[in-house]
Length: 115
Length: 115
Image 1 (cartoon, rainbow over the protein chains, first blue to last red):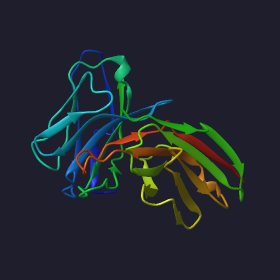
Image 2 (cartoon, rainbow over the protein chains, first blue to last red):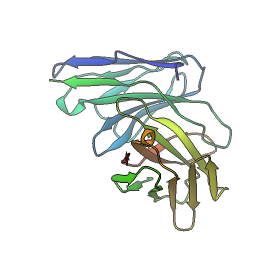
Image 3 (cartoon, chains in turn brown, blue):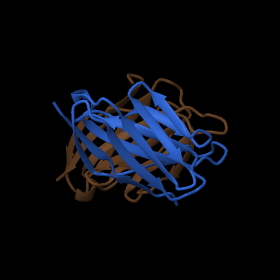
Image 4 (cartoon, rainbow over the protein chains, first blue to last red):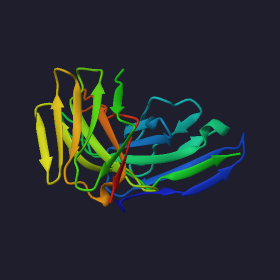
């Protein structure tokens, strides 16, 4: 678990501001994911990446931007934060398993509050 | 796309009793079904998973069963202990030859084990 970290752990921002959440993993996993967790909705996939420079949308991508220039980093940017983006954000990573899905390991989470 | 429903949303049991959490999925192509445990304020962690070529899997007090025909799978915890108290999430993944590795999560079950 210590191999995947997120920063900051807590963030308070205002509506309209740009915010970037960082995710770093030391396992050289191919896949990385961003989820948001809200009461009553479980974990919802925002964006994912199969490898460096390859990203794709998940269930709830609107209002978010991602990039992956290096295998170990997968930052998530809220270009203009809204109150509805107040949530706990989890980053996860997994290895590529030919012909199957491998375990996803989650980071510790970032609690974001948009005022 | 895939949809995962999870029941019940809350479950209270006496210490030593068994607990069962059920999930249904919509896409018959789903072939990987993990279960995650999330303690309060912590990250989700994998506790057990099952693939579609297996009907049941056990790990000490935890077991998962899969019924592909009915498209549902269940988590069984026997001899519950207070430390089993947490939120449990089921998930389903669709593998396109390992091309996506995406998970769709259920909305979670809050399990409370009463001493």
